[in-house]
Amino acid sequence: MNSFTSVLSWLCDGYWPLADEDEELVVRIRDVRHRYTPLRLLASGDTADIHLAATAEESHTAMETLYLLKVAHVPEGNSNLDMERKALRTLLSVAGNTTYRDYLPELVDSFRTRGRLPQRINVFQWKAGFSTLEQVHEQHPALDGRHLAWIFKRLLTVLGFVHRQNLLHGAVLPCHALIHAAGHGLQLVGWGGSVAVGQCIRNVPARYQDWYPPEVQQQRPASPATDLFLAARCLIYLAGGDPVTNRMPDAVPRQMQRFLKTCLLESAAMRPDDAWKLIEDFDDLLYALYGPPKFHKLTLT
Image (cartoon, rainbow, N blue to C red):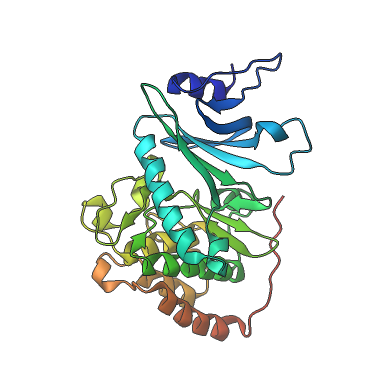
């Protein structure tokens, strides 16, 4: 039995496998026209698994359209997926056809199973060429300052948009930031921990617990400065430093180190809280360091 079959066995009512010799599972839901074929497990988090999938009708064709199925594997995962659905529908609606939409995962389907244990499943459009910051770090343990620059600017751009909607992502971490190296694009995923500005962040991934700022550790209200704190720690991680101690390698320009450390002060009130204003200041710094903007190729395999 494959991992997806195991997950759906745990979910129980509302699903049944259509087995063949390869134990391929077609996901169905009673009385609702939702039907997907899982292809392989891509990632497993604290509360949900992510599977590459196709629609059942496409599963025996060239499969030009692929999807990501996000399925809870613990009971509390259901509320996280529901929060993700609400946050993304709000953000995608506001983004419309602007470029901000490119920074968000495309939620194409979201539904609940029927039966004694209803579960929500979120379905996203799969896009080729994206890698998590964890995957980038595996191939490039210490990125050059020029790559740190464009990645940080992309993070600040999407966070600025999100914060204008009175929302916080709440988990700006290497597993939730995806970059498209060839096009210098970025998507911010993993919206199950998002909260309104001023609320407490309670959904903290276990393996990144030490990354969070004091206001989260002490269960105090979070602010845009909270997201920016985590974004700065992502940069330290990509630079080959220690995100928990905020130590950065000497290869990172001193001016950039000082800039990032303003986002990492103990008190949220002392940190910057306007991502778009931060981009303006960062642009001035980058011009002083590197001159006019240029495209710097990042190779990922």
